[in-house]
Image 1 (tube, helix red, strand yellow):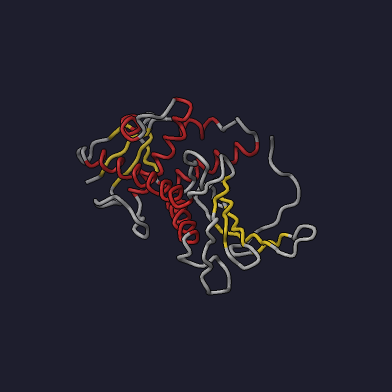
Image 2 (cartoon, rainbow, N blue to C red):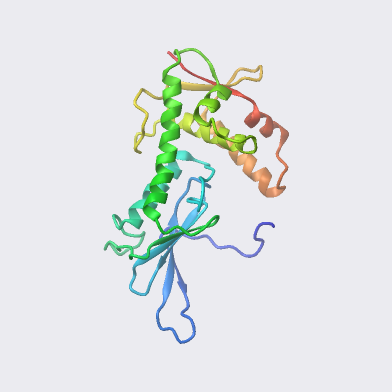
Length: 256
């Protein structure tokens, strides 16, 4: 299994991809691009619209899976994308098009993820994804709030508290998700619904490998970008310096 090596084309948010009707069928459908960054910086979903212009399905890619939760590249972007998918599925906003009319989803509205089974109970699946992320952020914030300021907290302690059930093979994925929650708390994400109810922008991280170097969200995203590029070029092979930075236990604290 590899990556597509053929010609590619940039797709724009709201761009329509017509699907030819089958033999003897005069009804047509079309796919409309929905920009949904978060899992990846260029992630998209595809809205399936029928011949009446109704959105009756979303191909969610890796944004919403048929089971479990996906990995995240940028948590604020990911949450915005989930809220956007939910709003369109409920007919609260129009699909991204020049037409300002609201397109109501049909009764047979479904989600078709890239992994797992199709989802008929789309409201519950979308809301479960949103609730899961907010719950993890809330648990992280609760753990931090019970510790004194200016005291470094090891990530391993946080991980045991927030992800007590995670199996060892998924520990690294859980750790990255934990860091996304921590950087959410550390940064200004007030444009989105958040369960965090204490002052932000005072939470800092350091890599506890003897260097005691402070790391910020920009460097974290840069590390993730290097990790993804390494995986794309040579799957299974990651630059040693990037691997060390990501796998080393970090420490966090609120500065006074």
